[in-house]
Image (cartoon, rainbow, N blue to C red; front, side, top):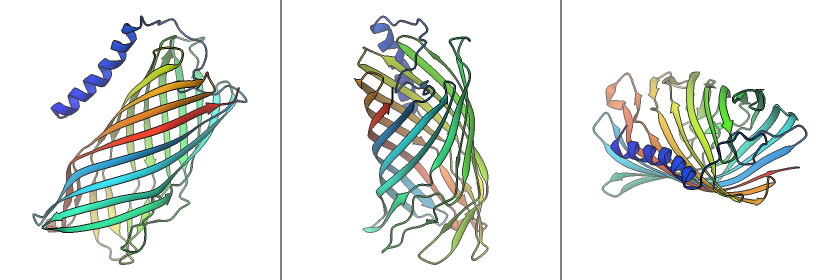
Length: 326
C-alpha cells in the first residue's frame, strides 16, 4: 500500500468519528430502519429503490514484453437502477441493472500514435435476496445473509473502429456473503464479506472474429460501511471496500492460444453526502469514490507477448436518488 493510499484510508476512517464526536454522538441503539443507511432493509410490503448516475475516469500506464510503453485514459458514464421488495420484515428480494450510454477509452503510444474505442449498452441484470437472520432489537447486532445471481443474457464483444463494444461480461456470476451491523441514533456501521463466483465467460473480438474464453474463478470482497447522521436532514456515508481478485486462465478458442490473467486487487474509498428531502421516503445523495488498482499482467507462453498495467487509479462522481414506499 502506497503512502498516498495509506493517508487517504486514514483520512476516511478518521473523518467519521471526528464528525460524530463534534455533534455529541448518541450511540443509543435505534430500533427503526433509516433510508440510505448501510443497514437499511425494507419492511414487509415495502418497496424501495435507487436511481443513480455516475461519471468515472481511470488513468494508468501499460507495458508489453517487447519493452513498449503506453498510457491510457478511460471515461465511463453509468445509469444504475435498483429495486427491492420486503417479503417479510427480515427478508427482501431485489433486482438491479446498469446501462452505459457511452464509455470511451484512449491509448497513447507516444510519438503521436493513439487508438480510440467506445462501448455502450446494458449489463446483465442481477437478482438477489437478503435475510436478516438476527435483528439487533433482540440480539446485540444485526446479522444478514445475502446472495445474488447474474445470468448470462447479453452477448459480449469488443469494440472496432466502426462499432461499439458491449459492457456485458459474457458469462454468469453469483455472490454469497454475510454482514454484521449496528444502528444507533446517530451512527451506523456495517462490515461484510462475500465470495463472487464468476462463471466461464466468452468475449467475441469483432475485429478478427476470435473468441476469448476466461475460465471460472472466484473473487472475494471485504467492506466496511458507515453512516453518521449530522442532523435530521443531513448524513454522511463513508466506506472502504477491498476486492481480492483471483487469477484466471484465458484461451483464444479460435486459435487455441492460451494466456494467464493476473488482474490485481482493487481498493475503493467511498463517500456520500445525503439530504433527507422527504424523511424516510426520498433521499438525494452526492457520491464520490476513489479506486486504487493493483498492477495487472497477462502472461503468454512467449514472454515477448506479455502485457501489464501499473499506476492505475480511478475516480467516480455521481448523484443518487433513494426512495421507499410507506
